[in-house]
Image 1 (cartoon, helix red, strand yellow):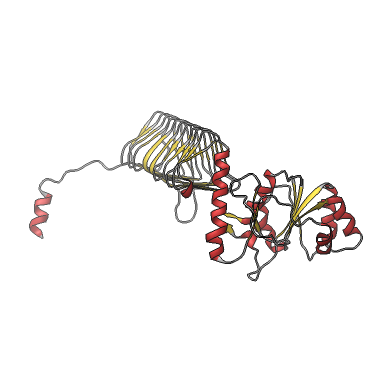
Image 2 (cartoon, one colour; image 1 turned 90 degrees about the horizontal axis):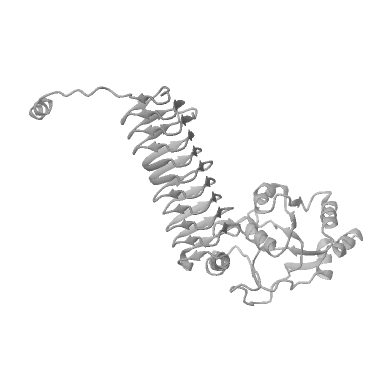
Length: 387
């Protein structure tokens, strides 16, 4: 496809929203359209929608996309300004559609498409608008209504249509794109890859993998089974097993899971182990740190080569405010330690198992915060007799 510019209408439906903002699988239909057009050579976008839809629509388009409200006094001027930047071929999408490019296994021909997809020269469209012709009139007169050589699937609000036609096509497109990039997909029927996802060659997607949003994964990653990753950046050779990751960064050679939960705004370093039933939130974790199991790390700045014992909790919330925990490199956090923020554990320091740490533990010190054990001889016997 030759077009270097696109004008996309987000028509309002009876709900006051647009079908383009509804999810196909796990990402908005507009994002599926945008990423398809970008891969086909479109470089500039003009989005035509109501001002109240702009915030929802903006994440579906590149950062430099232009917007114009159809009822705004400067609507024509905004369109002309866009066309001045794209005098060559322009594709115009007037109704919600899902596109499968030519050359894919899903680009089989179907019914004659409705007139909702046009191509024409930007300069010709600009000249017509300057002559006082309406956009709709110009498209009907000058636009080629059959520019797309692949599959053209109009979107409707019918849930059966979505479940039986739209989402199966989207799933297939995502899987085929992964295969064409050299990614191994173990089960094509249970793997779901969004339109903006990128995965490096040599990676493997195991059954039940869901990659959505603007997620990227490097070469040699192994993702799954039963894993969902949203808006994350994974380095190379990262393993994520039966876990969920959201809006975070995971560096090279790190393993996550099984049954781990990484919440937004985390940065996990290289060669880190995030094990079973571990939850991270709004935290940084340095290279080589081990968080093997049953641990919560929230609002924490953890250094490199730290060992978190089983059952560690960073106590970050007092019911009103959140506070941060800082842990230095090479620290050793004993099992069942509560770190009551704000608190700092210095480099190389230890905390004794079962401690509730409320004050600073200096570098290379041992922090002990627990009552001394006392045995009451014969207490259990007396208790049983009392019952």
